[in-house]
Image (cartoon, rainbow, N blue to C red; front, side, top):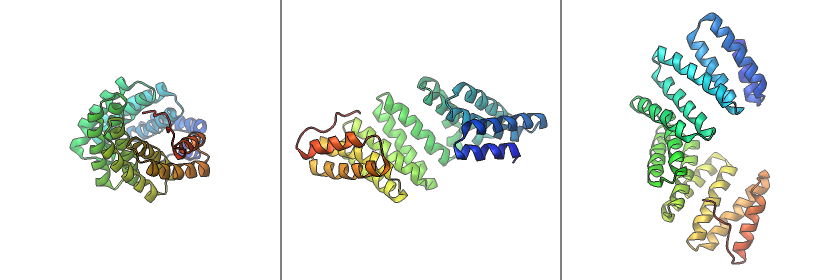
Length: 260
């Protein structure tokens, strides 16, 4: 690893993105001069990631597209698939889902024959989120279920936790409360296993919605009591809203206005 790229990674891990960007740019210049396609691809990928984190989507896309050209020249199909996912994510984060989807679908066509389940788990979840946002709940459910299968293959506990929560939310939006309850309880168990209390709280908010809609006020209150406890411990911005929701339920009133 070049010294410039190493410095870039240090600053990236520290969250100092401007300095990380500077050193990755130096690494790109050095790799161009050396004519090392593999090193240049790595440096450009790192630079693209940092630019994406900074919200500079145009610069990030230029980096990823050059990486893609280099990888196609090397016929590194696994890397090509992951770069296509990065390009899809970039457009999704920039609020351009219609431009993200073709990249996701091309990545899927490459990664499925390779059985790259770690990358596929992320890809299926991203496709599921797009379908969910568009109200295509049956398609979203199918994508999230495929994501779960891939996460299980590689033992990705974080992926399982998040995807069960996403799937549960989709079932809730589709008014399939029984399935939503099962998925959200699974998600909660995975978040507890991981020690991810904010993730657990986010899942329990959804679960409280399920219980409230099915008339199980006591279970909804239990969820919210835990949510408020986590909100307080971590200073989460939802504390006031969650506390008011909990109080209304205790008093027998209507809970929060549902945002899904």
